[in-house]
Length: 69
Image 1: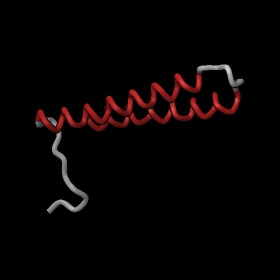
Image 2: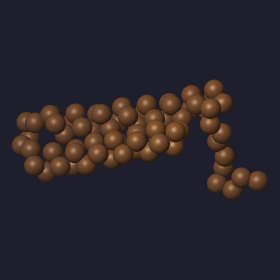
Image 3: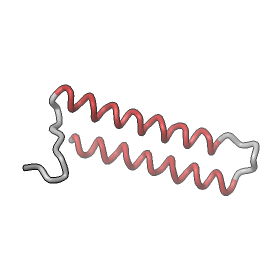
Image 4: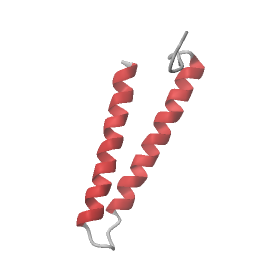
């Protein structure tokens, strides 16, 4: 379940990144859709990082290094 939530967050983040790129290429310069898509991406990224930190602090997930031993 935890992995599914993280993967879903990453999928939505990638979608907003792609939407920002699309809007940047297609829209005229007065449109705010690019800024809105990239703002949502940043907000979701911050929420994901804070969620992982909170889950680690609460003991819901265990963090490990690249080479746990």
